[in-house]
Length: 158
Image 1 (tube, rainbow, N blue to C red):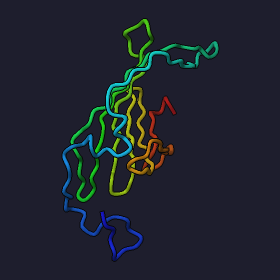
Image 2: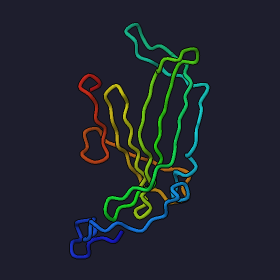
Image 3: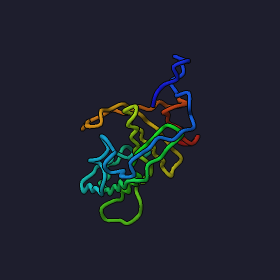
Image 4: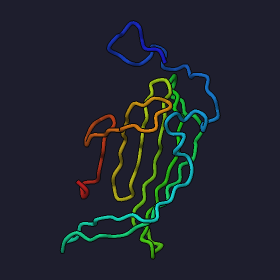
């Protein structure tokens, strides 16, 4: 994506309408997210849960599903991604202990990794970071209340 040469402060291209050509093989174009695709299980998690009488330790099991989605365009912006769902429950119960859904996205033109998530107790987040296409590690950041790449919660959770 080329930047607007007439405006050095504006990082967006002059033509915000024309969509790029793209490869429909999402899995081949996920950059540093490619190795995350699939179904993952954790069998021995331990949570420390706040309680009025003091912290309570709680064992849990986890299943995370990350499936490729079709390439997404926003004018010249192109994103490849994974739709994900994390489901956590206590080992001996079917009842959900925690769940979150969202997307992991890769923007090859800028090397940006985006993570969006939503938790059904009233919280949402969008975090970002920069990584090389072949990176095996990267760091994402979000800031509470930020208009871009932020964390937003319901009043009770605040």
